[in-house]
Length: 132
Image (cartoon, rainbow, N blue to C red; front, side):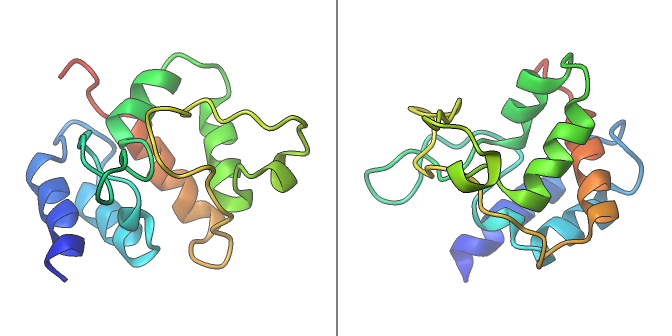
């Protein structure tokens, strides 16, 4: 239990006041939807024993996609459908986070979060301050 609470407590402590409004509510949605099981707001070099973090930190996602046209729609779709080879239809499958995370791809979260909530979460992530 302590392991699951630490990312949530950390996220509440460092959530930017200038990000999309309602950050407490967004983090509550993220926790209830299982996002915090793999993602964190800040990069943590430690994942499961001997591995990199399972998924990229949200600040890393924000930095990578902040200036990408259509990122809001692309990332919302990824949350809903996943990024696995079967969901993207790409062959051979290439994970652009390979080497920095231990998870091979993101599964679909359609059953865990509504699309409007996923879009709100992605907007919040893209609004994070990446200058830290």
